[in-house]
Amino acid sequence: MKPYKTVRQVASDTIIIHKSRFIGYASPAATEEEALAFLQSIRQKHKDASHHCYGYIIGLNAGIMRYSDDGEPGGTAGMPIMEVLKAQGVVNVCVVVTRYFGGVLLGAGGLVRAYTQGCAIALKAAEVVTMEPSVRYLCEVAYPQWDRVRHALKSLPAQLLGSEFTTAVTFTLLMRQADASGVIEELTRVTDGQLDWLPEDELFYPWAAEQPPIV
Image 1 (tube, rainbow, N blue to C red):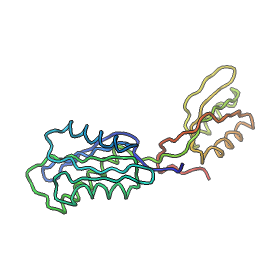
Image 2: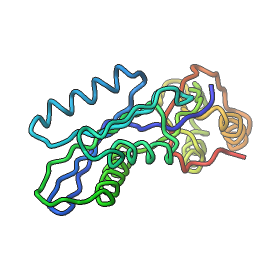
Image 3: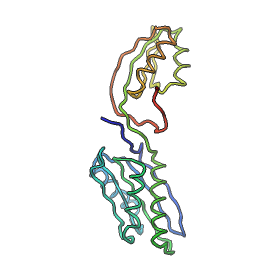
Image 4: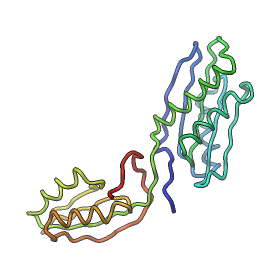
């Protein structure tokens, strides 16, 4: 499977525009049922809100795309939310922008900007990440090599998940598949070939999009 972009977590943020309060919510959603359940949970949380406009994209190939203006003038809410999702390239995500009307009409252009911004702040709060094929490695080194390993890991694209100190130091690393060979090669070098390692598991894991792979 290829890498894909989504959001790390459920999160929200709020903006006030001409006395109207817009609350942008974003959530991971692997199925349409999950997206609709998330939408319903927001409706229940804000029963007194004026509108709950939303957009969601489901499927790694964006096979399901739905959006709604929820009573706002046509094309001023759901479509702007969807355009932000498409521009960010995210899938398996649902965004709901809840509005509490403040008494001042925003006009079509103002609504488009408000819902665009509401979606953008929701995605930022939920953190757009790249889900990439990743691997966990179980590694072992002798005690004299451990400081070298810890120092090297500070500049390598790998996460140290845990370590155990017995007759030697056993530790678990999480890496993207694209990085694994480079990380193991570098750790082998700094330990003078005294690193023992074993691939333990393969999984999809959310990595910050700006983190480049080892070349």
